[in-house]
Amino acid sequence: MKHIWTEKNAPRTPRAAERVPLTLPARLTWKDQRGTTRFASVVTRDVSDMGVYVESHTAVSIPLYRLVQFQLEPQGRDIAGVPDTLKSGRVLSAVYRVKPSKPSGERQGFALRLMVDPRRRRVAPAEDVRATA
Image 1 (cartoon, one colour):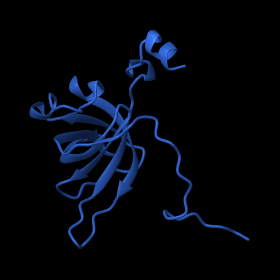
Image 2 (tube, one colour):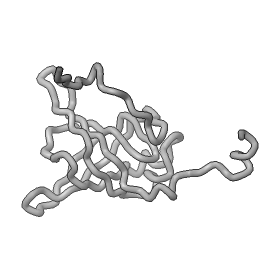
Image 3 (tube, one colour):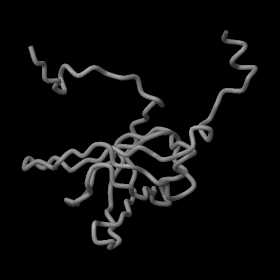
Image 4 (cartoon, one colour):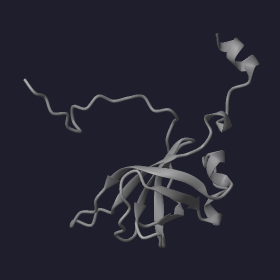
């Protein structure tokens, strides 16, 4: 019997980093298939050290797996809960999920994987690790 996974019965994998629900203005920059630089204003919905989910104000054509530059607007960088990886400016990211907009007014969404060195993530000091072991 062939089984087709749907969103309801797809197995869940644990997240690499805890997501924080934050609504902040941001910007995406990428090059289209002709090499023309494109921009889009977006709003974050949740962020983590390794990824971010954003919704676009307007319909944009960004294909799956496209590399984009993600950047929080300056007024949102010092908000509590913003990961350090997003405070410094532009972060190279890969689009790994695209949610199309709906006629009901639901905005187009993009899940981005932040292309950061895993060693840059905050690691608990060694004495904290020993204390909990």
